[in-house]
Image: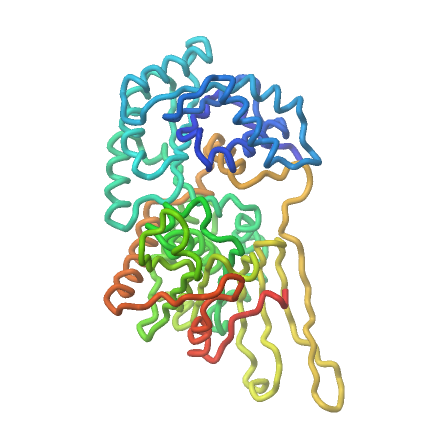
Length: 477
């Protein structure tokens, strides 16, 4: 298979190049693109940040990141050395126009005055978005025939702020020049959900609401909030994980299949699902916080920020009406595991027998695989059943696999929008999350303390029991 490459000359400008996102994700992603020879020789990687740093210091910073996070089995010092020659660092403020004019001069000098494609990655806190956008707008006509922006989530803090931010940005740039990121859509296993459904009619025959008892999406983390605590304490687990990541997974799983794979059709169908979400009015919200959370630096005294949330919700579309959906995510739990469970209704004649439900399970981490679990009658005098499991890996295999951020950089440079969010999806998801938070505040829903290394608050089981269901135990995977 021929590898997709970025054929055109380009500049990748990373704002926030001295920060954690760049070090942990972006630098290793760029190295992986270089390792797979997906980058032509005529490109430059510009790091831009407020931190004072020499060119040599920046290159050492980049190299250290790659050595720490790249695959040790495939690491190539030669590729890294060649890549370092393409790096340049510019220090400057995000709200100083003169600093951006200096950046523009360096971008042009990198290609001997030729105007090339420019992609600006915003690896900065949301507060820095507006000044960067404003100053990029000043220099965009000088630096190239095209300047596009990749903006990391969160995009806004609620529906109102997201709408205002989008309006501000589109006053300076066309919406076609924006790539709004949810990095989960760069993960190979998540990217596989749509093509699996599109190319396999049998999956869409199975994914019909009238045949389904419930849907469960679990994203469990063994780690705590750690170095993100300053950010996390202001947003909590619902905004951090549910608002985009898990609602996007739900939309990919339940959306109507468009006839064509064009981006507008896919975004429209996902948006229909997200805009049709309805919260459970009878409860349906369980919040938790691990016991040591308040002892961490930067956590506000008496913080009630949830580090665990479980929700019961519905999709008000005819196909999915009254099918309960359970979503949960949490930190400092017993294990790290992300998976989707579609549990099918038992036939009427089997309800009185101890027969396991049929299930479609899509595991996203630690293994990337799809399972179909059927029930096998062992043929004994006293009815006895066992699971009949068929499974296939969803993991990317071979030399052409890329990490999530490398996938997204490649997609943006190739002009592919399907792995990025539309503003309609973002506004719809914020509208739903705003309703959840308004209800938490109005009803005074308490945050329950839970022990580190546990399964989270036991009260989460009340959500599934409302429908006589149970959370699927990941230990059975």
